[in-house]
Length: 148
Image (cartoon, rainbow, N blue to C red; front, side, top):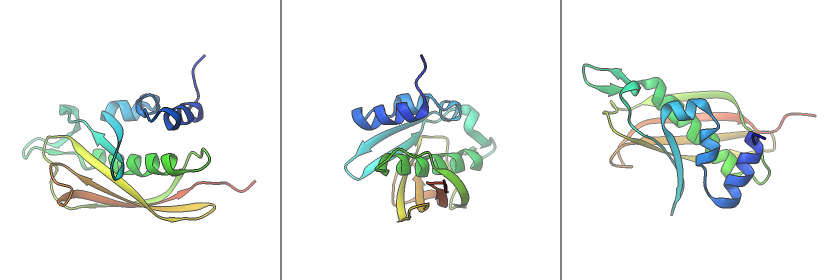
């Protein structure tokens, strides 16, 4: 029997291994996403692949893949921090592209800036070699609990 996303999340929280959860999301597999805990919290990484290039002249990663990484990092942070298992639903997300992302791995970290009973605000930052030089940022608002 195949585990549900909620069951995979519960197992990932129990063991600290998020790869099974990410592997259950086809788009995460396409993007090459992985997640790991470090001293500062959860980091989501998008492993470079030629299919992620948006501008082959520069070359630079496609902005849509950076946006998907940032939104995914925000969702994974909410799922990791939630006291109960919730599957956040995106209400709105805004991206700021700060510089071209070269053909290399990209890392992202998200921070919950406001957590209400129904809605959460999350900021996410993506960088390549240096966290102090982000390539893109995002602000997202998520529905975390629907009215009965």
